[in-house]
Image 1 (cartoon, rainbow, N blue to C red):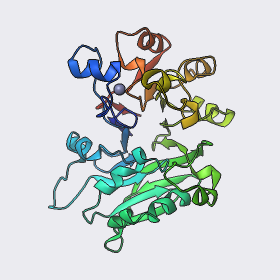
Image 2: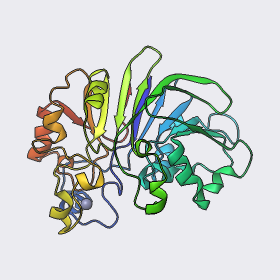
Image 3: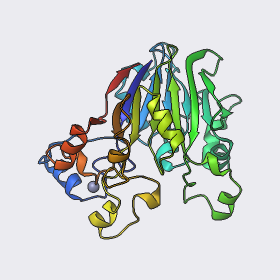
Image 4: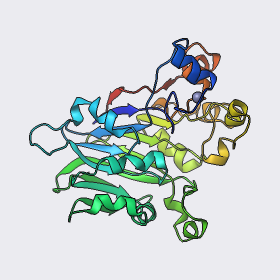
Length: 308
Ligand SMILES: [Zn+2]
């Protein structure tokens, strides 16, 4: 199974258009040792010709153009993208779906709750302008499903969603949120190759529990929420703002941050992804970057590829 990282930043990307934080300003000035990053996007394929997207980034159009494997190979209207798995209803995870209109048949895998949120929004009707354009496949945490193309060819990739006790996006009205299943809001995804190798993708990690740590220990590659270094990072950078935990992201640093709590997970290759532009680990000369590297973690970059 091939795994491509098309984008590695959190929402807003790096630099972010309306951000003048130290990281963003220094990156623009060319004085920061670090790399620009687009908003998080991962693609997987078992055969190199049929690809499945994990979430749908707002930067998807430029990410597709930067990735020859995803270009049309033959017909006038054709794509190497066969399907998309949605792990939350966050704008950063679903906006890219709208970029995949143009009457293109696609399989979308999402929980019934996420599907409902999107189908209730009339803008997403652009995906239903002809019969069988986007085919919605309901998934449930804990129930395995196999990816397949719209014409029914299996990808030989088996997935299992893990419920992560996160919240529905704030753009969903409070009354509507109450009608949705609690365990369908934010998911992690185990992705298994035909040979039984496993990627665990968790771009938003609100809380750690024993089930999730067990899943990590069974995986070969971890792509984990690296949004914030510190819990008070937004307040510290902007003068105000919610804590990392309040918006569904365990920070990296601190006694119960992921760096310390996941130190006991030894088996998989461990990579932080979905990194916010304010995060100090984006500066490769910073002590924070050195600390994560010395603890055995890597910091994902756009364009990286793995083979499992
Ligand atoms: Zn910034």
